[in-house]
Every structure is written in C-alpha cells, then in structure tokens.
Length: 255
Image 1 (tube, rainbow, N blue to C red):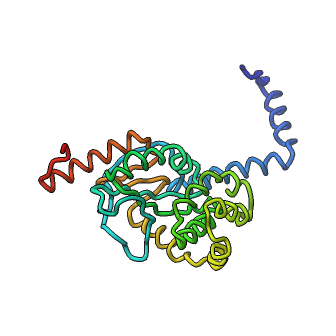
Image 2 (cartoon, rainbow, N blue to C red; image 1 turned 90 degrees about the horizontal axis):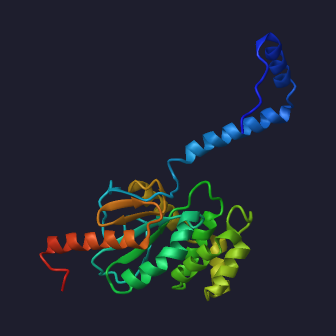
C-alpha cells in the first residue's frame, strides 16, 4: 500500500523536523539496538550455521587418523574406502535438520553397507551459548560407548536445551542421557568436571585449521561441502570419491 505523501515546502519541512524531535528516547534506543544487532550479525558471518550447500576444494588435505589432540567420533567401518568428515554444532538448527532427517538414510544406505564411514567433530559456535554444554554431554556419553545414542537425543531435543529455551541446560541434557541409556551418576560426574573440554577445544581448532567457516560442513573426497547436504548430494559425493579412489588404486568399483 502506498504511504501518504508528506506536505512539500517550508511548512512541511518544519512539521517533519518537529515530528522527528518529538520522538521518544526509546525510539532511538531501539534503532541503536537494531543497528548493533546488524553489526553483530556481520561479525558472526565468518562462523555461522549454513543453509545453502556449496562445494569447494578442501583448503587443507585430509590426513587419516588423529590430528594433534583433535578426535572425532566415528560411525561405521574404519577401513571403508571413503571418509565423510562432518563439523557441526549441536545447537545449530541446520545441523539438527541434517541429523534428524538426512543422517538416518546416510547411516542405513551408505555407512552400514560399508561405502563410507562418518566422523563427527563438534564445533560449538560462539553465538550458541549452550552448545559447549551439549558437546560436553556427548563427550561424557562417549566414555560409556554411547556417543551416537546421545548425539541422537541431543539433536532431537534441541528445542528443550538450546539457548532460546534455558540458561541452564544440564537438566534437559541429563534427561537426554537417561533416554540414551547412560549410567547417570558416571555421566553427571564427567559432565560437572568438564572432563573433555580439551578435546572439544581441539576439535574446534581442527575446524579452523581446515578452513571450516560454517556448520554443518563436510569433507568428502578432497572437497569441502558447506550446508545441510541432502542424501542424494552425499551419495553423489561418496560415489565420486569412490571412483577416484578406485582409479588411483587401479581397481574396479563395478564388481
């Protein structure tokens, strides 16, 4: 709808100036807050939750095994011909969509048949205040061999423990640990001591080393893919990586 025209000429100018000067202080405070939020958004643009998948050559070649103190969480056969390496934030909505919608297909149709394995590296983003707690909760679950069960529960319950839901996520994460079948006493002792903080920090440093700037990000066959990939996109990337590996090894993937 068109806005009413302001009167032109000197009288109109005086009226506009008078209206502007009579605005309450709150108006300018809100305007300032909006401006500050915009600047803050730009500050986080270098490390954010992604939504549009893109692929580029990986800036750092993938090295097999552990790099420094960084240790991801592997799912599948360690000798699978292709590695899928995921960097994700437990509080990232796009990561939750991937984990709850796409990952089950990836597990059943790619990981379980042995076409590839998947290694998850946690990358808590600074704007997600409860993400470190979630990484801590998952690492403590790994002590009991239940990282992936806890991973599922954390993402499925993201709306319960995230920054927007609570300032103290321990209770909600403890409920997730219970559903995941953990020994709660052992889990809570580990959680309270933040026993695996060094691992979490090392995984974040590994993300920086590899040039990861958004979550989720994936490394498949020497390429960095950013954004919540679909099953078909992951399958195509895995097939391309398998074909390249077969050529390099002089074997045939059609057998």
